[in-house]
Image (tube, rainbow, N blue to C red; front, side, top):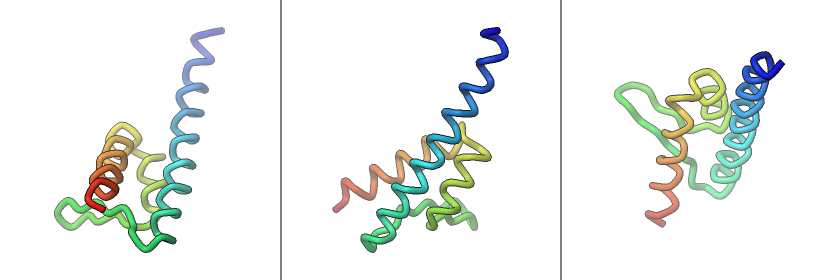
Length: 76
C-alpha cells in the first residue's frame, strides 16, 4: 500500500508547490517586480510560465524559482 501511495504524495507535493509558485509570482508581478530567469534564449517572467515550468520539470525549476526569487528580494 505504501508503495502505491508514494507517487501520489510526490504528485501532490509537485502540484502544491506549483500552485504556490503561481500565487507568489503573481504577487510579485502585481507589485511591479516580476521574478525573472534568463538562460540563453529562455526567459521566464510570467506566473503562468513559472507554474507550468515547475509542474513539468520540478527538479530543475523549483530550485531555480527559489534562487531567482531570493536574488530579486535581496537586491531590493
